[in-house]
Image 1 (cartoon, rainbow, N blue to C red):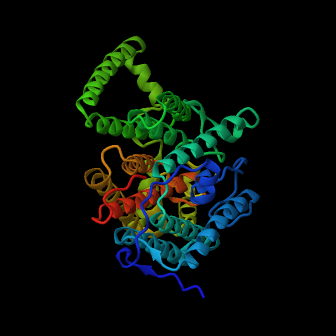
Image 2: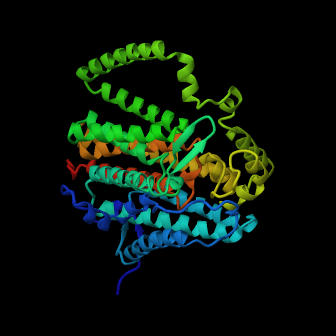
Image 3: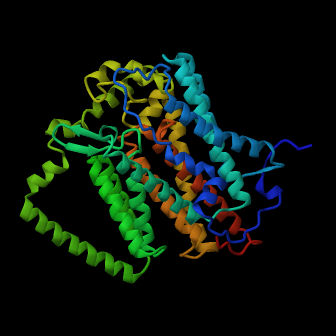
Length: 464
């Protein structure tokens, strides 16, 4: 008879073997770690239906496909957890995993006052299924650590496949992936096919990291970086461009600190960039460049973040008098319908609507939910940062696979948090960006567990 799974301290049970993990083929990798399949979304080759009120329940075969996709992966995770003789999760990681559970309880409680209880309940279920998948991955990775850098490469592969799906859709159904914005022209937004505010940026960041640290062919990484950069520019989204620039700046500064040679290259590159920038500004004109970057918007539109600040102010004002929030997912679509109709969301076709991941959580379940969400992110980043430093100082060395994967995942999470300032999709299930951010969190927690194991005296080194 199989004993029920128990949550136990890692020190009370036999620790996992720390042999080096081989890289698997892509097919075997996704079958072994199906949580990465969630990063696909999966794509929906459909146009938004104008007039559908998504604050209430509605039926779509594509949505059934998405829910089935998540349910199959979650069912596998539930079976594996239920049949485990013991569940090993380090104390530091377990303390973080408890918080999303309590956050989910708040989302569930918000169903009581949600204007669309059915859809709120549905999304609460999707939220818990996602975190079950994440918990199972951490348990499995603790026993048998994967090749963590392969996890990074497979995430890039998913992003590249999504970009390919957008390009293949473009000649046959351009309206699915393109949009025309007054003053900005044609923008490659990805629509329901792929999250263009995330996919090309993932490709660019990972490729830039592997190029600087020589983790793959530099020709390949340079090519993929240019692909990701081109995809980002094609979206004409200032938030994505600025977030990508911020992450790349942090990446280059960190790389420059590694050695004197890197520092010299950084200084030379910086001086060359300044000179080149001066030439470009002088030949094109600073005003034309500024207008191009701002997509021809006037000062008022720029100051209000294309009208977002009005929505943000409305959400904060409401939650000051209603600290419990509006109701998970459904609330913000109902309570601010008038604002959306005259501002950013003229057609009420999208789930969510604050255009800010942090304010989306606030609107969903109030100030306590926002505090828990911020604590989850802060503790994850702190654990990842400490583990990256401990790994290089204690067990791995500066060129370790685990150390590289941790630093790269932290950079990608930094992008998600920065881009989350203008997009709510990072906190809404069934969006690819939501799963990408959660996969990065679970990778940081899993890789940190590997560092914790290797830092113990009985295990002098870990090479995978």
